[in-house]
Image 1 (spheres, protein in one colour):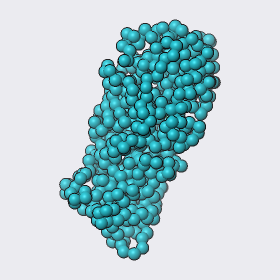
Image 2 (cartoon, helix red, strand yellow):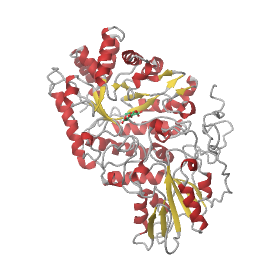
Image 3 (cartoon, helix red, strand yellow):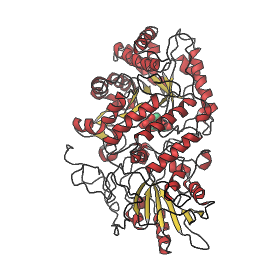
Image 4 (cartoon, helix red, strand yellow):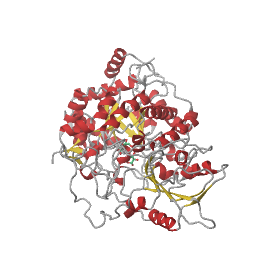
Length: 633
Ligand code: BGC
Ligand code: BGC
């Protein structure tokens, strides 16, 4: 059904010959749906559109699957009927389906990558990718900007949760499984067939290694380090046939990757043999020079093939056109970029160069949020939980009277984190997740009909008899990208209330279980001291019920689900303990990479942990580098 590579090549060459310079430049521009109508996309022969975080059909956060499909049809229809070309080229629509189809109301939201890294489960990863691809395809969208293959080395970085692990092994293993799940296996009949979508290896390269974990910052390390620590996931994704790569916002030794010809062209397209196309990050090409047009031209010359434009796509189009007529960007570079874009479209079965190229059938609408996907997500939650401490209070019995406290207990938005409906993941409440389940819902489910009860009390107060146990759910507020950058890793400095709740409960003799919702390891010694058990749930997504599944014994009193997760990030001993990574010289974490208790393990009663908060009074950015000997400088 899908064209052979020989055919792809013929289609591409025939198509390319039919395009004017203007149309070629149009193919190299990607506009945002809020800023380009179907008519405009057709008129300028734009190559692609995207929906950025927080952008929806009609600006409606609760837009239905039908609304998404109708908008996709409107774009494709306008392009197909375009009067500006004899052979209109179909567009690709890209979206950030980074933990499920997370921009879409009612979709299944899987745990963020940091939790999946803790799960250490490649089969699960591929199954999640398959489910995500089906949900994306059901909305008429062709392409996800995922997987993120960053190896985050400094946990102050706001994108740490988008990283599977601080060590490349997990990232390398997952990269190929996810790409195979999203696109299908290259060379097999269902490659990019119905229910499959294009994947993106992002971001290339080194973004997890910026100085002080600053988003979009500078990476200062040797090429060996870049290759050995950060390129592995990309190499694996390319071997698995990933069709697109997104350039990274960071610089390397002061040169922005978006303008780095050596990295994008010589390494990525040359040495690594990547034959798909490179998409810029959101206006990333503008960061390479002061002058807009020059920035555009330099970025394309460096190897960017498709310009992702936040708002001003007309300017990008005219700038690039001007750079071509001025001779600043050679025609050969334009042809190479457009060939790459057409090649991917042809492989996806979109371009036939016949007049009415029909789109492959998408998947039924009902797959969005379907029960089997939600069950898979719940399983992923169970697999990702990491038990740091248990003095015997866990597992809970279903006939227990459980007080469920903390502002994360009944808060699906908080448990999903950033890149969920909105860009930052803020401003969402439970009604925005019609198929979602809060952690508290899971506690009710676990106790109701079993003689127990779950009582919700965000501030931890209660009247009447004491509960048998209190579960306190707390953690970080949602954030994305640079908004999540921090100067230190002290949790209680930023959020004092959960610790106060835990201490009050402890004083009243009530056993406490902490469930920590977080996008990174944080210094929580005071909270650990005030907890009888401590579980890291990361950012579990919409299936909060997976937490209670593991915290409670089964209905028959036996253990249905043990803990499984193992840290894929080292846990800090103090608030400034970062960078901290397995393999460092003088590696001395509080909990090492790979740590995670099981129920069968000997009861762990660690002594009282030091509660001196090193974040207080210390100049945040002025601390020794602990990166170890492989790092120059
Ligand atoms: C992010 C990318 C994302 C893009 C589109 C950028 O700001 O860095 O990861 O794919 O926006 O939303
Ligand atoms: C968009 C995101 C994008 C970000 C980049 C936001 O306005 O919604 O998709 O990643 O800008 O800065």
